[in-house]
Length: 114
Length: 115
View (spheres, rainbow over the protein chains, first blue to last red):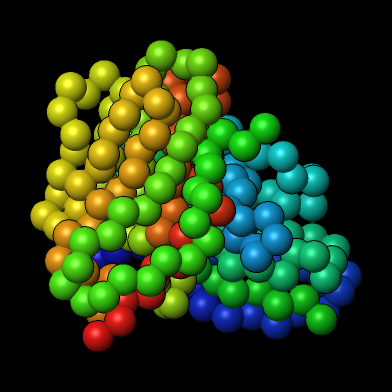
């Protein structure tokens, strides 16, 4: 069974640009959650999608948005990038909303904003 | 206020020895779940073990066990017979059944296993 796949693995963008990250969950999983991980703030929840609907949202500005497609694949978009958006972005999939018993994470997309 | 506290930024252990990683939590929700994840340098978060607040017995998964002390609000991870491949960051997380149902993660503990 294929795991959670995140693309791209690495990304370098310039301030002011926008970026789209992709996450393909484990087959059959309908919940996809996104997290931002930085040395200063640790692991912070961005949002969760379940069956194409945003179920939960963390405390991030509106520049961070996401969506989920009918095949459960999810994309996260960050507009008007700032230096502070440099981070590892992790996607997690699970059968149930909120992560269930266990969420399965991808290897992440490491975004560097210069 | 921190909901999950991991007081050990770094830990060292000799190969084949056991090690305990500390985690304390804060919640008023009677129903919650506690998780431990491992994050190697590759970045992927790997689920290790889960403990529900109503579970009577401590969770175990292979070499991993969770020392759940509900009254003290602690959920320490015990790794027995450490291996070199256990070197990684370890995160404790909690999900409360009330509210948003979204997990909160601790800041992590870096474990280094020496040969």
